[in-house]
Length: 542
Image 1 (cartoon, one colour):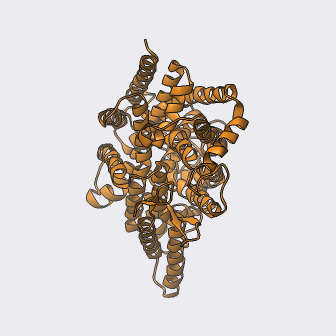
Image 2 (spheres, helix red, strand yellow; image 1 turned 90 degrees about the vertical axis):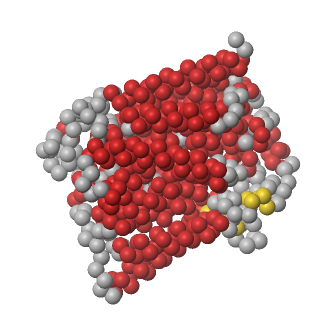
């Protein structure tokens, strides 16, 4: 067999095994029926320490980490490393808020951020608006995963759209059948493969002259380019844009529906806190993958057809043994399919609970909810394909940043709402709409520039809004959030001064501290990872 045959054989064998694992997840230590949104959409809220750890890593450290970030550092250098401090900054926020989200969700049976916002501020309209915003913001993020998978197929020499459609179709069917259990089980297998990829990357760098030689070579490469925006180090005008992308991305990450789903699927508060505290371990892999973008640039890797997403798989093809490259391709492929599945499940749950059940069929049974979510999850993937066709950014990472501009506008209701119920429901709706309008206007005004500074596309060219001719850019999502907060805070103050009644808060302070031994929290007999330890072994009534 030729080297290419070996790569394809290893890739196909591993991907086939992953698909079978996904199909089999429907029977993986499940209760008698999976035909409810509680079981299909959040795994029965019973994932233990190990499953939660792998699911969080699989849904939050995605093909964006392994393909989009190296493509960004390959193309523009230091700015691409914003993903590392943003991921680190997300940890303390998630540690504090995720336990509160778990408790209130288990007390009230929430499976989506929109449900919580509606209950917290007494507004079904706000819940629906948060749900629609989350669905729209998730589609570009899913598109990042699909573009990464498409890049792997390009490097394998499989051209056209049909391989991508087949892969997405297979993962859609396994998700349709198994729900959240499929990506949870696949995340375990993915991380086993990821360890091999990371170790292999370190060994290849060490055998190729080390990082010192890499940094010297890539510094010379960036110095020879005409673009003032790239460089081994941050330029003077790039620092504001870099900082605002970190802050905006850190705030937006917890607002995404898929991040909340992975957390509330855990069995108790301690499981959530332990796993969010340990998430910086994944940042080591993220930082390494970013530096591998430098390594690829220093060693003359040339992307196929100008598609920078092909840089990472090409590097494995050119510098690794064929069998090892095949393992790397499979890792990248699974790292794309797992989060795409989790994101589509979360978006589908949002539609079912905050729109379908609230407005279309209030009498929907648990099995009706699961059935609607199954079909809605397929629609989300088609929406992601539309994002690829309509936006077509220079870097796939921009799709995630554009999605962040949208999802950030739910932060006052979803993220800040976990700590305060002061905001008025009408002010939150007005602020969200104002933030969305400002975000879309800013994105429309951002051109896509070539390395020589010429305008390639007049509108929707990225997520960093230029401040006049200064050369300084600001993340559009943060500017839109400021507009949102001004409207929300000022509107709340005026409405309260005018005596306009707000909505009834259906949550209580003790809801945010509830644990599994709380009699108000429902328990399942079939816990996936065994019973919680210590004080949490007590069961409340079912």
